[in-house]
Image (cartoon, rainbow, N blue to C red; front, side, top):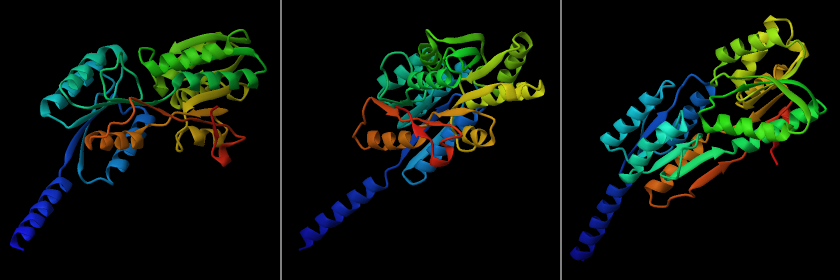
Length: 303
């Protein structure tokens, strides 16, 4: 009888020790100057809060690639159990992520792709698909013709490249003409400045396609200051409830295409990895289009 009690107590203590095991996750965010990225961190924090065994350490690279490389290396040196990285740029950040992966630290790459496959899991929406959907919507809205401004996200990042490529695919062989394009680096003040230049040069702009909603809003502010906001349609990407969707409801944006943050999915994937059940190498998030016609119904999922 004593032997049985000893075995049971030993099993209980072992199980308790396992249950109390904690994991440290390092989160490297490329910047917190974009509302979408602030929301990503909030989504991660909210999802992680339900799991007391997870300890998250956040670092903000402040839009500095060299700083982000150093922060990833700091996490590796500290011996974190898992890394979540939302990189600023693909090429410069591939080596430090690959180095962490090779040292046995699982790495979840969130939002922006890196070069190669030296990571555990990539989570993000299909930016090329979103760009194509935006392009198709624009062609239909403008009846296949008109002068358009394209305000690009950071073009050394994969989302910027894909949102541009998908859009250009959809407007090819139509009468839609991009008369002005600029890299506004995802930032509203930069977008406003670039739009001021476009307005000064082109009197017949029909629509602005911005790679994110802050860019579209910045363009709208520039047009409003010039008294031309009612003559131009504004389209953005992100679709945050407090931003893009609100702008659609207010009549500022004609459309906002959702780009999910992936915060909840990152924590789900992290838990799977830490418990020895790695998820798929790639997790593609679904997106919606929000327009005045469907905004109250919760948007329409992209085909």
